[in-house]
Image 1 (spheres, rainbow, N blue to C red):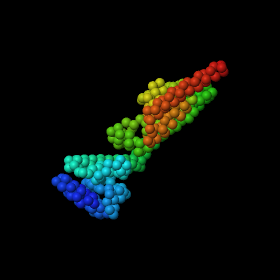
Image 2: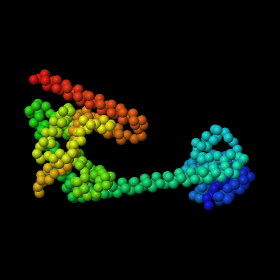
Image 3: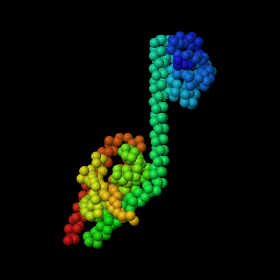
Image 4: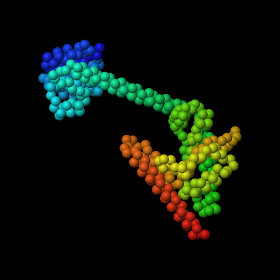
Length: 356
């Protein structure tokens, strides 16, 4: 049977509440705030609700509530105020301090029983929910720790290091081929088709997380078979037509295999993202022979890369309101950047024509 603490300096009120609640609850009683705090310290783990008078000698109800707030007891024990007043200011102050409800004098048995019952049930639900959330948070933390630990094991494994060396070699192969094309364009056409190349290898944590999220086995063979973006390059071009020309020349090379292509320039994502993505099988030449490695190559203009970099940073800002409006404005910026790319390309074409 649940225990309730009734605190009121009027013995008659204590007895009336005892008679109303005794069939459903064990009743502890206190005649003032000081005695109430003593019993809270002694029985707080057992007390399911506190019925508290505000006007008492020695220590009034507000002082008891403040002490409960300081000790965080009020988060776990519902407080119902015993009062003959209906002053809005007092009730607002009590609710602001964390009080759950009011029981007004003279007492109506059914109302007292239902308000106490509802307060206890609501707090039980709240406490259960908080416990569930805390347990889930702990589970997620443990899972993250496991991921970190397994990622560290993956990073330290000799075979994994060798696989990462192979992906790094594939990146070097792609960079070399692109730089050769760039040098040829510079010599033949007196201009360069791209401004910069950025490359990256996925971290062990990212590799493990993606395999886990996709439901793939955590093995080296699974990385080779299922992940196409372990090795990645971003090629920053000056103009949109440079992207397509460079990509076409690149995949025409007889030792390059085009696995998959996604054209987000002609078919932008909903947020306005534009880029040409190629998944390629690229040969690397090791002491024991040739093998193919998957590499993701993204082609963008300078303007597209500028937009994508800022969008990525904004996307991870916390507690951002008005999300729909932000997405709309990002799309407008992306559309403006597309227009700018086209205008700059037309200017380049005009300049080239004037030189002929």
